[in-house]
Structures are given as C-alpha cells and as structure tokens.
Image 1 (cartoon, rainbow, N blue to C red):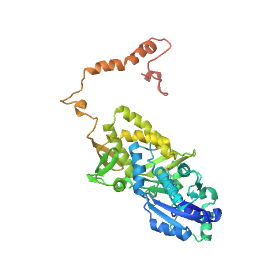
Image 2: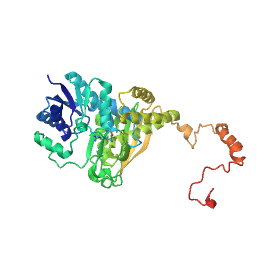
Image 3: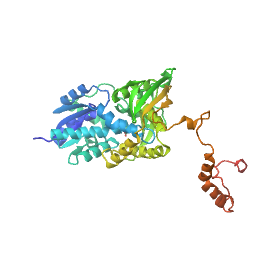
Image 4: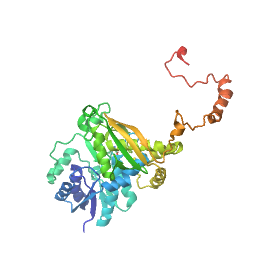
Length: 419
Ligand code: ARG
C-alpha cells in the first residue's frame, strides 16, 4: 500500500503542481485539505480541481468560526500587532491549518503532511514548527522549497501533466488573505521607495473615493471580545466581515510595513486589515478606561511578547499558554462600548463607556463636584521629587565636574542659542 500525505491545498499553481510532484517524487497518495479561513474563494471548485489533478481525496473545512474564536479574538484581547504595524492575519491562520492537517493525517493514517511554502518566508517556519509540536512523528514535506523549479519550469511541468494553469493574467502580487486581513507582496512593492499602486488594494477604498460624511460605529465588547455592532448582537465572523466592509469603504485599514522576517530578511509588506485596525483601536480604548496604569504598562510587554510569539510560529508553546493566562485575566473588566468615527482613511475613537470603568468624573472634573483632594498633592510631590532634588543638589548643581544640570545639547545649535 502506498503511503499517504495530506497537502494544504489552495487551488493555485504551486500546490496543484505539488500534487503530481509528491506522487512522482515520493510515490505517495495525496489527500488535499483546503481550509476556509475567510479567504472568499470558491472552495468547491478548489476541491474539484484537486481531484482532477490527481488527489485521491479532497477535504474542505469551513474553519472560520474556529479561526475567529481560537486565534483572532485571543490576539485582539492581547492587542497583538507585530512591530507595531501588522495585525498578524496570516501568522494566526497557519497554526490552525497545521492543526487541521495533522488531525486529518491521523484520521487517514497518513505518514506525512505537506505545504506549499517557499524557503524564504515565515509561513514555512510556522507550519514546520506547529506540525512538529503537534505530531513529532509526522514528516513535513515542502515541495516548493525542495523542487527548485522556476515559475516557467513549473508551467512546463503543469502542461506536461495536464494540470490546469490559471488563465487569468497572473496578478503581479503574491497575496494571502483571511477574515482578519489581506497581505500583498512582490512586484513593484519590493521597492520600498515606491508608493503602492491602487491595484494592490481590494478591501479598502482610496481616500479620494471615500464619502465626505463620516460614519459612526458603536462596538460593544464583553471581556475583551466584540459582541455587538451598532446595538446588534453578532457572531464573530459576521461582525468582523461587516465592520471590515464598512471601514474599507472609508479607506481605513491600509498598512505599509517594512518588517523583519524570522529568517532574517527585511521585507516590504502591504496589508489591508480594516476590521482589525478598528477593533484593535476600540479594544485599546476600552482598556484605557478599565485597566489600571500598572496593568496597562505590563500588558504592553505581554502584547509585544505575544505578537512575536505568533509571528515566529510558536503558537503551540508553553510560553503561549502562560501569556494567554495573563491576558485572559486582564480582560475580566474589559466590558463596555466604544464609539468610533470612520472618515477619510481615519478611525478615531470618539466615545467610550464601561460599567466597571476606572475613569471617575468626580475625580477628573475641573467643574463643581470635584472630589479630588488637592491638598494631598503637596505631600505627594514632595516625596515623588525627593530623589530628584537630592541628586540635583548633591551631584548636578554643586559639583564643579558636572558642568550643567541640562541634558546634552542637540548638535547644530550655536552656544548663544542654547538654554
Ligand atoms: N509577511 C506576512 C507574514 O509573515 C504575510 C505573509 C503572507 N504569506 C504568503 N504566503 N503570501 O505573516
């Protein structure tokens, strides 16, 4: 009996060629798996194509709910944004697809799984690490990383093996998308000096084509999870989808990022993540209302670690479980409603309310009803500034070696212009 391999199949040229290539070079039967994580493709047509090219079985999985609940929402609660820019859409989907591949491989008695990643990117890292953690005994094969064919050679191979080649003019870009965002790479975008052309964008309007009228949206969160939009309770997939369309209409969600890949390359990436941009901002605004200063500061560090962990493919790690425990705990009171204004490419938080808000108007107000104890400030400042005054007196003002209490002067100012 031939051994079996489960291949993550997108329906594109690479993974279609991979079906035949795995049969020829590994002598294995190929079972394909196509997961819908909100990538809006004709999934049934993809399955038919897999079978036509020679897969013995073609599985399709609607994984959108799983993706949102186990991956996207936890990342939103964590405030996970890689290098301050990238909301991690692709990076979040990879461990889910890896899990589905491994589950199917076990179910089918397959000895290997395969994916269509190249040897330059982050996705190979995420797949290989996730599969290795979930099922150390399963072999991982990455045909594209192994075969060393150019695109033209691939097309020749496809023609020879009767593999349908997409007839539409090939997009100049390499695109990956799911419900949390869309990434666009390659072609002219590889020049970091050039502005991305409009044809790179599909989900967001150019600001010049957006409405003059702002659109206000209210997003309700329950323990850090968005549960309703404009007063209507929605499931996660619907909420993200609807909000994405709305924000994209107003030109919100374009990201242009030169990022540091795991393998050491810097790469220029364009993203469209309209729903993610709005939800991350709204969630942050609600945390501003409900977390203490110390919690908020510490959470920033956790967010950074969490984002790096996801980006680097370490989803199935103990570090993740530890960080996630902190994040879950931090969200206990992150419940409430945020109002944002979408207008001309901007998303501005303009209203927030939370039943357990730490914001207290009686303490904050400059009007009547002020309950803050002004006289307590005097003693507080005395102690807060004690070390500052001591150091100034002992080291900075009275010492001849220390010429000034001022921080270093910026270059380019004349002596007479300095403070
Ligand atoms: N740079 C992003 C990341 O590493 C997007 C990768 C997109 N992947 C792709 N195969 N086109 O997560």
